Length: 279
Ligand SMILES: *[C@@H]1O[C@H](CO)[C@@H](O)[C@H](O)[C@H]1NC(C)=O
Image 1 (cartoon, rainbow, N blue to C red):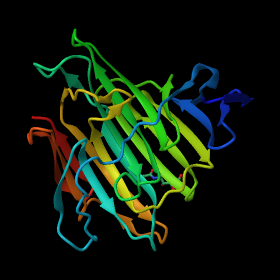
Image 2: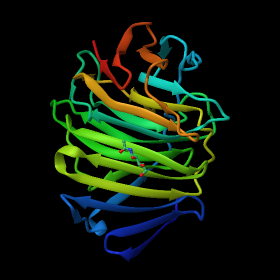
Image 3: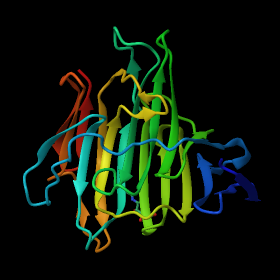
């Protein structure tokens, strides 16, 4: 279904085009040295429905008090701006989820953490990047980085070094509602990848998100593992007018499972820091 055309412009730059629509190029450096992009592989995976699956988030203008919202698949923070002053940048540091098996739940189990634009109110698009960790029945875990411009394909990034517990940063900057730059760094491993994307699905710029997710794959919602606290730090969004927003006034989202139990909760520390915990 996805015809991928790969062309090497120079060894450190790679361009992928899918079906003549969304296209992207990637460069990476590790400890200051250009990474040979033939060692990096973008593996398309079916688009995942990462949008909030809960009741509508109660989104508050900045001046109002922080609110608590419930979701069927998210824990974290969702910040809101207006269509007249859309969000054009979102940034955050977070730890790649470190997992242990939840008892009485089949393995494998998962947790994803990501930063994105437009996960809540804009149903037509969502630009995001993050890390998914999987824990197998023997307790062994592995993590991988990915990015997605929903409803286009998601890509697992093979070759971007990441282990559970690593500090990752994601910096998404749009240059138009359909183009932008995604910078994923693994601070601990001195790795920086820059993705330049064009012809993406049109963003609204209405919300910024910092999320730990019990996501859906082709077979339905995956089993959420137990995870060590995931801290989000230096969380900030910037609007087209240059207004800088932290998480003050954001919807702090708690994941409530089908039985009504809280599967994970987020608590704010200050305007740029919060923690997501699993009970
Ligand atoms: C994110 O990237 C933009 C564009 O490259 C840059 O201007 C901004 O300083 C970056 N933000 C952070 C927090 O590094």
